[in-house]
Amino acid sequence: MQSRPLKGTADWQSFDVVLDVPKDATSISFGVLLTGSGSVWVSNASFETVGDDVALTDKPLDDNRPKAPVNLDFRE
Image (cartoon, rainbow, N blue to C red):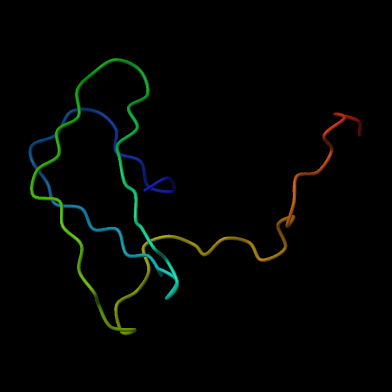
């Protein structure tokens, strides 16, 4: 949901997050990030397997990202 954050006050709504999970994954973690003051409520969270015909809800990670930490000495 990072590319489509929820803002303000709203009535209950349903939101889907569709992601590819690697076949060799051993766990899935999820949570809620609240920036600033307010409240967040979550109800009836679930996981489902869907087909390839269901679109992902976020962009895939950039395959050109570094494979290890870079610029650890904080130089340009």
